[in-house]
Structures are given as C-alpha cells and as structure tokens.
Amino acid sequence: MVRVLSCLQPTGEIQLGNYLGAIRRWVQDQTPQSFHGVVDLHALTIPRDPAVLRAKTLETAQLLLAAGLDPNYTTIFVQSHVPEHPQMAWLLECTASLGELERMTQFKDKSAKTEGSFTSAGLLTYPTLMAADILLYDAELVPVGDDQRQHLELTRDVAQRFNSRYGTTFVIPRAGIAKVGARIMDLQEPTNKMSKSADSPQGTVKVLDEPKDIERKIKRAVTDTDGEVRFDPVTKPGVSNLLSILAATTGVADPASLAHNYQQYGPLKADTAAAVIEFLAPLQKRYHELSDDPGHVTQVLAAGAAKARTVASVVLARAKLNVGLLPG
Ligand code: TRP
Image 1 (tube, rainbow, N blue to C red):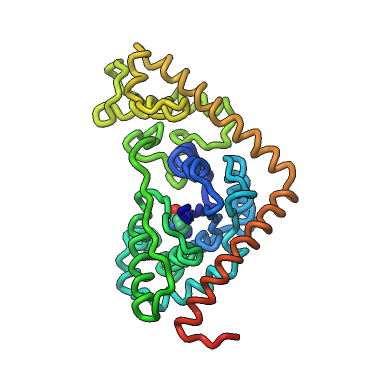
Image 2 (image 1 turned 90 degrees about the horizontal axis):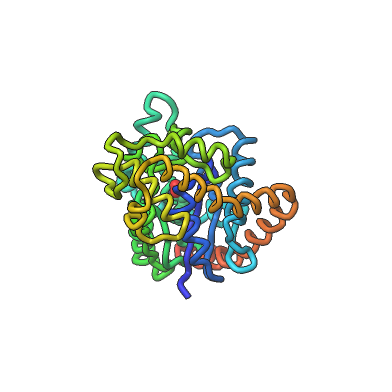
C-alpha cells in the first residue's frame, strides 16, 4: 500500500473545483496509509484575523470529514497540533538554499503582489514547511494540483541533498498530478480555473452554498452567442465548462457525450444546477451534522494528531540523529 499525503490550507472557502479536483480523489483513494492535514501554519505567511483562522481551520476539517475521509481509517490532523512539523521545517530550511527558495514562482508572484507592503520571511521559507509536511510521513505519493509541482520538485531536491549529506533519512516522494479530467472553470470567466482565492464570487460555486445560490450562479454562467451545445473548451469555454460540471457531478466520464442531449443553453444550465445541488446535498447534510457537534470534531482531530505524531516523531528523531543533534 502506497503511503499518500496531501494537505489543504484553511483559507478561503472550498469550492466545487477543489472538491472535484482534489478532495474527492483523496476520499476515493483513501487507505490506512493516507495522511491528510489542514495546514494552518501555512496560512500564517500573511497576517490573518485570529478568530477567522481558527474558524476556517475547524470548517476545513469538518469539510474533509463530511466529504467522506474516514478518521477510523486514514489520518486527518491539524498541522499545528503536530509540533514535529515546524521542527522538521528548520532542518530543511538549513538544507535548502536561499536562491532555490527565491526562484519559486509562487514566492515571486506573491511577494510581487505584496511589494511595498509587508512580505513575511515565512512566504519565502514556506516550501520547506511543505517539504516537512511530506517528508515527516515517509510519503511516497503526494496528490497535488499543477500549481504545486515546483514545490514538490524542491521537496525532492532537499530530501536528496539531506540524504547525501547525512545518510539515507528520507523517502523521496513523487507528485501525483491529476490528469486533466474534471477541470472546473470559473462560471463568469470560463478561461480561468475556478479558484477559492479568485475574487469572483458569482463565478465560484462553494460546496456549502445554499441550493438557491448554486442555481442562480449556474443560470447566470457566461456562455456565448452561437447557441449551439458542443464540447469545445477552446472556442466554447463557458458551455464546455457546464458540460464538464454536469459530467463530473453525474458520474459521466466524457462531457462531450452529453452535448447531444441539449439544443439550448437554458435546459443545460437547469440540469447542471440540479445535478450540482443533488451531488453536494449529502456532503452539506453531513457537514451540518458535524458543525452541530463541535466536541466530536475536536475529539476526532485530537486522535488524528496523536496518530500523526506516532509516525512523524520517528522520522523527526531519525533526521535529528543523522544531522548530529545530541539525543535528549
Ligand atoms: N502548499 C499547498 C497549497 O497551497 C498546501 C500544502 C501544504 C500541501 N503542505 C502540503 C500539499 C503537503 C501537499 C502536501 O495548496
């Protein structure tokens, strides 16, 4: 059984694209060798409202549980509950080079955006914390989106460098980049990926949206004026996106095969909205049950952190010993 790890930041609200592209796959592929973290320490690279961060961390964990990750089976934890993460991150910060971190495109993009204001040192060292998340669990496979490919490469480079300096310590992970199956685009700007960080509330279906809001957003989705229902993401991005969403939420593998059922955009939108609402209903129901019982979720997360630590503490001890720290 392959050891799998992937994590999610508790920022923004989970939307349909995250769910179909990432979380659903984690749920389908879960085994007792799966580890999934809500990485709250990563969220601190920019200043956040403490109350909001706390609430989002709980909400994200509840969503993972509602989506079907089973804590009796896989390990679900909050990053800051496992103190091995920042400890390991320091060892890796001292293994990565400044130039390597400065070359990360995400760092360049984000620090350019904050230019003139405040850029935290954490924004630069963030990939070594991510590497710690992965290496602490001897993860072999890390399912991530394409935007994280470079961070995975850095993780591999740093792990290899550590191994060659100090002797074999880490398992070298590989990235599991999803095949471009269900690529869900923004409903208002269908050439952009639907994103929890994009400022496009009308183009983004959040998994906890009320049915009436889902319906409104899908009915107002941008299409085009030629009036023909055809799957052609290049010339007809809006219509193709609706077909992709309909296919993904009804379990149809090929969105193009649905096009001939429709002569007009109206019925396509109505069916897509109904399909999304029905698809999300069980998740929403479980989510609300969990939010009615926060004590239960707290217990589940405590047990998850304890389980995570049994693995992470062994790997951290191995790394500390190999690097030359005196055992305490
Ligand atoms: N950096 C990832 C993101 O922004 C989140 C993340 C943190 C992660 N640690 C990880 C993903 C470890 C996979 C494995 O989406």
